[in-house]
Image (tube, rainbow, N blue to C red; front, side, top):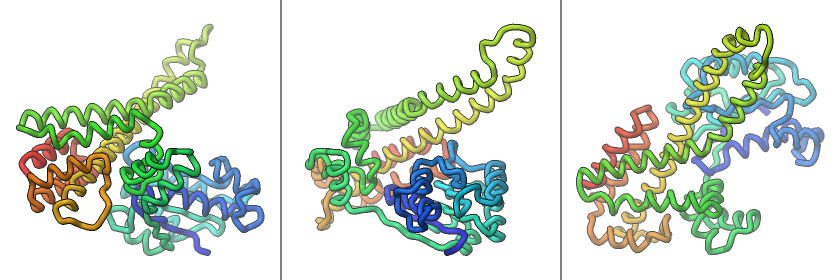
Length: 358
């Protein structure tokens, strides 16, 4: 047993699921991770008093949040065996937040365990100094057959639909479930995969970029609207919204700062949701160019998008392997640019032009 762990793996590999299960095992009343006791149940449900989950709502985890968390985690467990801190997206730590976490990892409290989840141990995802003080748990994405089996057994998805969704999701169980059960998600994916056919000139490239950005913004807005409304209503109720009588007007003026802070957090969360939606679209697009490339090279691998295999074959008859690879690299470069905070519209427009030129 050690005080700090890093769970790594690509999207869909189950980093957070594994960290949550490990946290439940640490808090298990029987010490075995039975899954049935109060410690296991409350940890898995996210309500255990000694287990804290850090889920960034915005694009990053700030130093203030991390300092407060480290200070609280230094206390003695209230009822469990350990104080457990699960950082689900440790790659989103700012430099200052990473330094605050590093100090806690270097001088850990005796009954505190840190569980960090990152895509990899690359310095861009987690600092070398934090990595050197943690035990590594590498994970991988499950094969498409395993994902399809889960969809059939757990969600009752038809076998053919499950196989298609598992391949299209490229090993991500959550994404596969969404594609299998949500018609709107399938429509958005179809629109993304239609992009290569639309790029006939510069104007078409700009239009395609605008359509992609607007679609991901609409998807992101729809995903957070209910949570935003609930948070605002709860805050206004807590602050006495609608109250009457002496002092009500003064109290309302005093709440403006808290409402403004809530709006700032919600705007940051919406930005992250839009970036995540755009990234999913780019992964789908990269999968199409990957299928074209494997068709050109006659690689003995299954296609990612089985339903667009005829389109991939048609494109393979027109493009060379070199131009297809350049297109694939343009999509990956767009993802990287957005990851370093290039404006999404600028990055996507540049990508569309590169895809058109080949």
